[in-house]
Length: 179
Image (cartoon, rainbow, N blue to C red; front, side):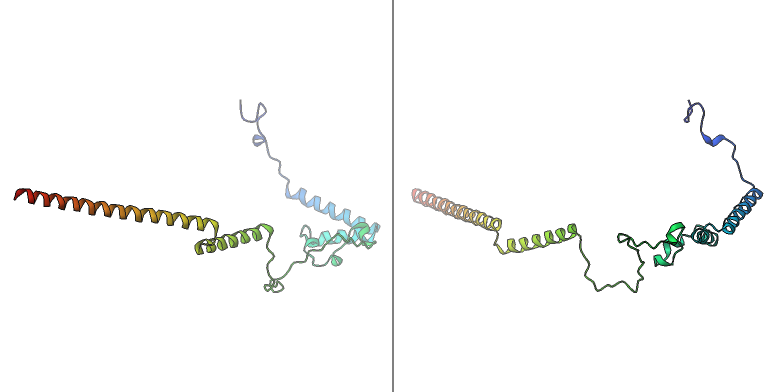
């Protein structure tokens, strides 16, 4: 069975195109309708809103304004002044306005990471100086190993001297017995 089921997909169907004449007719009808609404005089806010749409269709001028008071208000908004204390107008800052002298606020994770690195560095410094418990244990273990090696080297030296003395004594005996 094909991928789209029995009916198939929309891709094989005929496409419908709107002719330029139809588009022009729709645009004229829309303009006429707006002019009739203006003539009726429903309200200042609605008329201003329609004019703004004709001038800048879809430009998003309301979002790009720096101050909220400059924008055109639709409907009842133009008649009633409402100040929302929770609304914060976002003003874009220019590069010249940004202050680079301010100390950058670090996030909690960044602060903790920096503190962790500093603590690790402090520990390594103390460890190298031999002030930590682990460093003291390591130094004690190394001292014990050093003593064991010195004793082993001394024992080996004594055995070597004893062996040489035994060999010399055996030669001395051999030389006496040959005479």
